[in-house]
Amino acid sequence: MIAGRLHWRAPEAKLVGRQSLAAFDFPHGSLVLTEAGTKHRASLHVLSGEESLRSFDAGGIDIFSSDLNSFRARLSAEKPYT
Image (cartoon, rainbow, N blue to C red):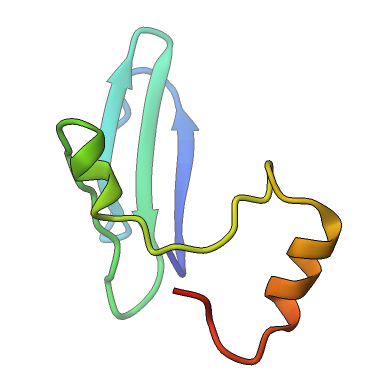
């Protein structure tokens, strides 16, 4: 997301202005999704199962399981990995 943010607000937060896109209410507060960009590219996806989640995987490196050398190699590569 380029110019969007998640904000923790008081319970049952109201969507105010054009920047507030969605609010998710929880017992102790609301998580509000906003987008300040002019192109309005924010999106939410509801998925069922791991296979559906894998369809959104754009590749890349898992920074939590890679070592410094493989991380450095990915950053300095001329072509993106697929």
